[in-house]
Length: 628
Image (cartoon, rainbow, N blue to C red; front, side, top):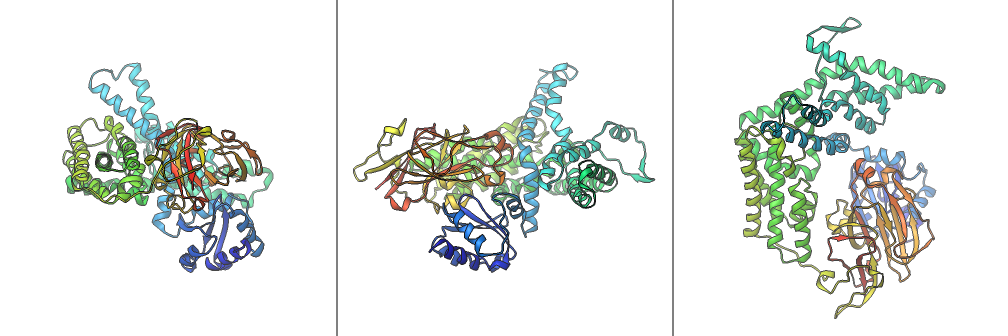
């Protein structure tokens, strides 16, 4: 099917041009925002020649095409009256923000606001726990300068939390973040706090102000910034361009800050207190039941992405009561996943599974469970169920002990200092039980392991610099050796969250979690595609292997930020030549996953694509072998 015929077929099968709000494309797929997704014929579209697969995610209807996506997109623009937007610009933001599901939209807002802050919150939380431990052991005096500095270091992010949330909320609601910071600053302004502490009654234009302590608060500033976004857009329509940069911020401050003190602040404070009180009621009803439910279902919430909704509740508990009983219970669920993965490590006979299970166990112990869930336990099904059972038992023990966290931290072993105090012994016992019980259930009851095809682990695998290395077995002949374009940790494609890559629909290969932002050529060949945003590059080797390297998941939304292209389409490149630079820290800080698939997109032309058995690779180490 020609690109022109394919474009017509796609538009017809998504419900026609009238059903399309917008469409743009990234490196491999067309991303539609549809008015009514039920009008799209997904089943027929997936069977259409030229379409690899169809993915529905975050309110988008994504049609995966592959390397020719830009040509198909151009034909769609030529054949329809749809707006031809610049790739990865505002259309991408509009499309990804659209979600007809209210719960999905709420979770998206919360995750977008809190995700960039989690590192700072977790790090400060652990430090706060350590400071409390040092005080309890009398290693520190609470009047010493050392204590004051460490306490300030651990407490500042929580005390000034509205200011941090103002920044991320402004990014989410697409409004002036410096005005948002000014609004948050007013909420924690010293004079206001002094008035609150002294019991002074205040009014604004003779309207009484309900004074509330907004330090460590969450919902009031989010509501305020949301309203600010509408105020700024409204004011921009009526203020002349010559003074807009001055008067629009002035109007926003003049309107939003009084409204926040009079309305949004008290309402948000009541909502926060209500959520915290709701959980406290359930906890008081039965701490054992609350712990069992939290330990059993936390990782289920993670899978569906609704776990973000609990973050404001936990922070609200800490702000209102000085502690949160939920966090220790959730850690039981995390340790149970780690234990189940360890059980898989000892039980499995497959080398690839063992390797992934070993590294995933360590990551899960420290609170990173995604590789464990998607790569091991959920994939094998029964280990995930066993982990939920063990998590429930561990959570119930922790709940029975009245355990609590004195600061927010990511559930995991590093969070232990934040649990010191009431019920700490129950935390230790509960976490050990969750971990050991999950491992034993998996090892004793077992699981069904799928048969695997021959990989590089089953044959003599090349090591070191593969530019001059070949791999052969008795039954296969090496076609082409492909070297690593990145330095980092290897992982199977199946562990990626994007089904277009994890399902193998795009081709065979491997994923790398990069530790360096230098991407080099894996083959001698020609650059066939350099996406305008720089996040994806396609290369065809001199021997015919068609390669796609896609840096991170959904990084097209960065619109080229933090990427520096070193080559252009048509360039002849050699193995090891620098193709792209990208800023790992900035991309991660923006909330994006950097797991990078390295794929042979024409893998169907080969007997197999063998993978390295090494868990860590450097640029130019052996990575893949395409064989015939």
